[in-house]
Image 1 (cartoon, one colour):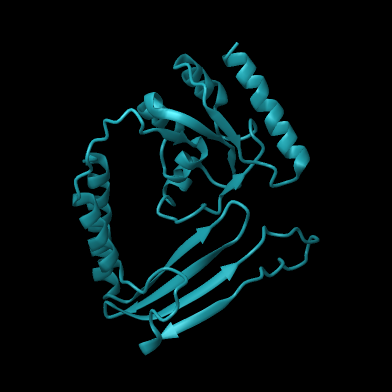
Image 2 (cartoon, rainbow, N blue to C red; image 1 turned 90 degrees about the vertical axis):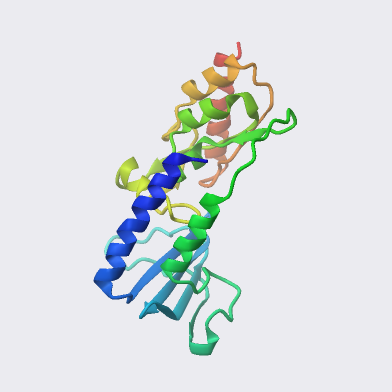
Length: 237
């Protein structure tokens, strides 16, 4: 049982109870999901007197397009709908029509479930340092905790378009990719590949390292591959 996560949950629940009392059970919250290639969706859930009365959904596709200075931003393509009354929950897409009380109850039940220990040599981990940032974790500390189990690695990099890592951690409840965290060229972002590869080579890692890049073209992908090859040669020499 993760005591730190439980403490974090209790603190969050206490904050929510105070906010619920202040708003009288009338509020709107949003849930956002997005892919690293730019498509995704948002759902707004409207609650009145502690009951869901409306659900609004909007999808979008494609990465943001550059426009000339002074021009309005390009409108993303996608679909949208709104549910009220008996229509609530009639669409399969989007976040479910649930109050925050219901979500906190579900989260508490999940935290109460015992997680059985896995002591099987066939159980391995695919290490992805970039996704650790999304979860509010330190990629190096995470690697240290699972190093003996790492069998493959997903190499990528991320950079902050705005704000700080503390701002990002405050968004760790966002499903998918936080808007402020962008996909970038490997070796030019937040990940410390010297720290990562020195640990993995020290454990004689010899598995696959897959590359996630090229979102800005094949030239970017080639530079990322060259960077990784150089670091692999350096740390596994």
